[in-house]
Image (cartoon, rainbow, N blue to C red; front, top):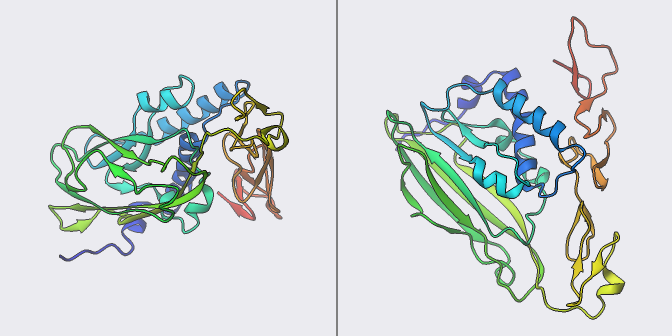
Length: 296
């Protein structure tokens, strides 16, 4: 099989579009794993997200697409319906191609055991898929991911839902790493979809909900131990002992979430979520500083 993947993305997506789509998909992923929303800022962030979706709502019906649908997202985010795309018009969104992609993702919370995806090839397209990596690196904590469909086959013409289950063993607490690998090949051209094979290494938190006699000593950040001696976290914190703060969206560009909704930015960046750059020289002709010393 002859596969020519090198430089396909750069031929399909120019520099500025790649940069902007990277920002968009960053927000998409943060929505997917940022399970707690701030009630004060939620409407504002939702409006911004919808504006970005509309900005990049080019033809999604004619080619291979993969997304999380509105109903699934609505269940995750307190009633907010929206789509979250990973592949659009036969192209993996560029953020997935970032070599630091894994570092940007928070740990999947213990209460999330599966994610529903929807995909389609389009009426006039033919794609073959192969989930060639479904592996847990900590089998005493997390079982290997399980699909609700065959691991190999044809992408359906019309939108169809499938699930990826990420089951914890159930008797041990801890954080486990796992890998999802996906190849998608255009049968008509005998080439990979631009950006695939996709190789994602993610982390999942598993919590054994047995009683902890030292819960009162360990439960932090104003968490409260219930009658079963299990730490119950306030809004904005997660983890067995409420040790991790959540920022929505997640702090960008290497920023650190130090409290719910509070980011401390790395040198050269600014903004509520460290989304803006600081340029040593003023951007000219209406340009905007979007990264450290980088104008657009």
